[in-house]
Image 1: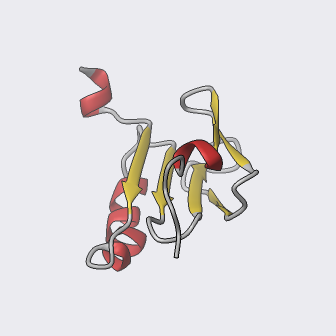
Image 2: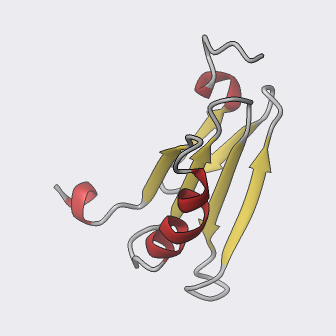
Length: 96
């Protein structure tokens, strides 16, 4: 139940209708939650992930942003103690 009330990672799959809101208002709101350590945005129309990671050792409100668009790359998700390969995120997806 703790994951529902105190999330450490929030993942959003972007859509044309909500992408702007996900990148701005929702990101700001999620980053204000003390439990959230990571915010991951997934583009549905091209291989692209945007990963925001809280850097509490620097300052509780300091976040770094990493963008990945190479299907051979991977991102580290410290809150889950795992590595997420872009090829796994987009398995079976065909891009125009």
